[in-house]
Structures are given as structure tokens and as C-alpha cells.
Length: 103
Image (cartoon, rainbow, N blue to C red; front, side):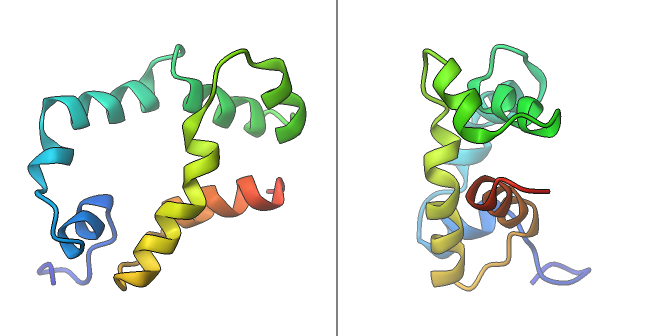
């Protein structure tokens, strides 16, 4: 447990699974997270921005010619977090938005 309470990160989940945290915090993992958050070419970011602007998930996915893998994997990440008893409030909210297509 962190000094200020329980941690709620993807790193906590992969540590609980026995993976090396450097896989996530290394250059490729950090670069992937930064690309998703800050670069308009990111397919996952594009889905989030378009959902946030009011488009329906099915409509925006059908208009894309590439796969935004986060749409299909969001629920799997939450299932792993639950299995390993790690809370992930941000990713849980994202998965709920994708599953229910509502805000």
C-alpha cells in the first residue's frame, strides 16, 4: 500500500499478476501511454474524443478504417483488476462508457 492509501493503477494490476513493472514504465510502455493521451493520430484517443463530442460508438467505429484496440480490451482490463483486487476507477469509467455508450 502506498503511503497515502491504496494505489489504483495499471502498474498495480500487472505487479499483482507477477509481471515486471518495467514493461509498463519502460520506453515503449510510456511512449504508448503518451501517444494515446496526447497525439491526435492515436486510434483510442480518437474514439474517446469522438465519444465525448456525442457520437455513438457504433457509428464512429464503422467510420474508422483501423481498429481502436482499447474498445475491445477495456472490459478485459477491468476483469483482471477485479480478479487481482486492484481498483482502477478511471479505466472502470472508460469501460462503462464503452459498454453503455452513455455519459
